[in-house]
Length: 120
Image 1: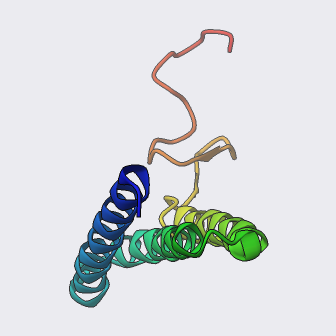
Image 2: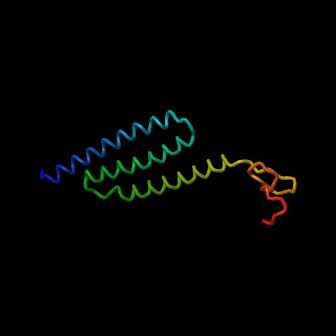
Image 3: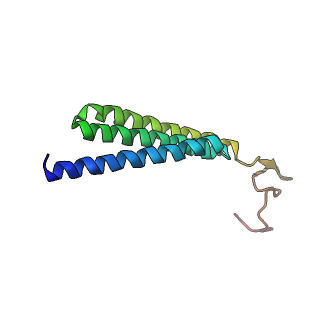
C-alpha cells in the first residue's frame, strides 16, 4: 500500500468515526428533545449523516453505486424539512383578530397601526 492510499484510509476511518460520534449525539437530541422542532431538525441531520455514511462507504469501496441513492435521500431530506417547517409555521402562527372596522389584525390591535387619519 502506497503512502497516498494509507493516508486515504486513515482519513476515511476518521470520517467514519466522526459520523458515528455525530450519530450518537443526534440520537440523544432526538430522545431528549426538548421541543418538537429540535426533534425535526435532528431527523433532518440524520438524513445528512446517512448520506455522509453512504459517501464514506462509497469512498472505501471506490464504487459509485451509492451516488443515486444519496441523491434521492438528499431530495427526501430536503422535502421533509420543508414540510416540517411549513407545518410548524402554520401551527405557531398567531390567531387573526377582527378589529372594530372589520379588518383583520394579527398583532392584537384593532386594525389600525396607531396612525389616526393618515392614508395607508
